[in-house]
Amino acid sequence: MSARRPTVVALDTVNLGDRSYIVALDGQAVVVDPQRDIDRLLAILEQNAWTVTHVVETHVHNDYVSGGLVLADELGAEYLVPRGHDYQFDATQVGEGSTFTSGSTAWRVLHTPGHTPHHVSYAVAVDGEDGEGLAEEVIVSERPREGWSVVNEQGETVALDLELTPELVRAGLAREVVRLVQEARKNSGFEVSDRIELRWAAGGDTAEALREHQALVADEVLAVSVEEVDDATLAGSAVRDEALDLTFTVTKAT
Picture 1 (cartoon, rainbow, N blue to C red):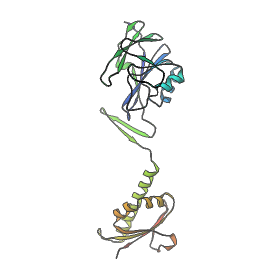
Picture 2: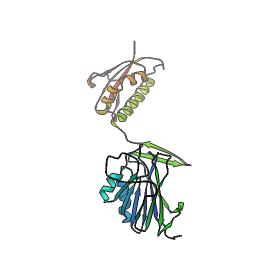
Picture 3: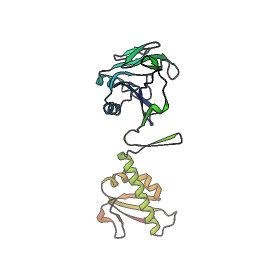
Picture 4: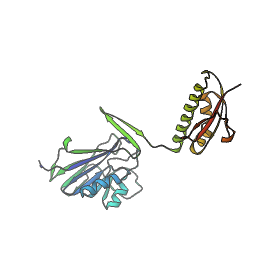
């Protein structure tokens, strides 16, 4: 058995639940199941000065868009796909018994249906001898997509999308207004069940948030009316919040 082993890099995107692999030996590499954001793969290849000879797929992916065709074209590598699909692009179709070489590694295709009917696996031999992969030889790189936070503990992974869209920002501002109005109700000595009239003036995102979420705010603070007015019309007892650029008054409804 050959003492030489290829380096295997597994690039994991947990929020998609899939992995891409790079198998490299003697400066030659094969990429398996590349994801669409190929920049991550290109960075690893460049860092290690690996030349990709083949880009291969194990199956047709229904849960994400493959980057295989684009990666193979950019690197001038041969693109291999499982036999049996009606592909709308040029690629080398492979099935049980198909073989190819990449530097010192020899690859043999195995038909392994299950995940999909046409799914294939790849057996890799080094210097003419089948290799046995060891866990300590596999480099796993787990990277969430930009804007996500990922925590992995005790075998369980939680991924959170941290991107704040304009809609989420306005919803958060509306909730902050609710907090301020509730505080003003308390400071005014109102009973929990008292209905109020809310008059407000604001600028920028806060004004957009109040217009968009007026019904939610009214429901949360028990307002029978929510009226947008000019700053100058608000009484001297108005509450002012500089951070939100918001001025408002609360009065007990009659």
